Length: 88
Image 1: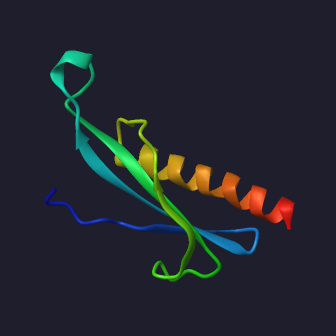
Image 2: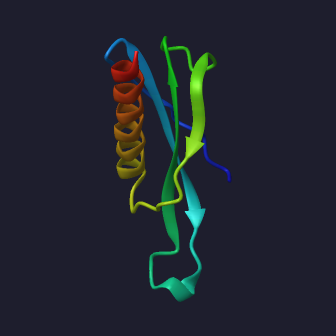
């Protein structure tokens, strides 16, 4: 891959969402740009990204920019936290 993973950590409802984005190659026959971005997301009770309770999980949707993929990961992570908090 040749790229460093940049973890974004955001506190939400007493838990932490950890998200990172990475480049993927898209085949030319789909009519999309050749390089797209995907994300990995994980959930934990602290900001340390080695102490996850849920994840890491990946999405198969592709995004045009790294920032868009990171934001998508954070939003999905917040939805997971909402479910965890509302069930508890």
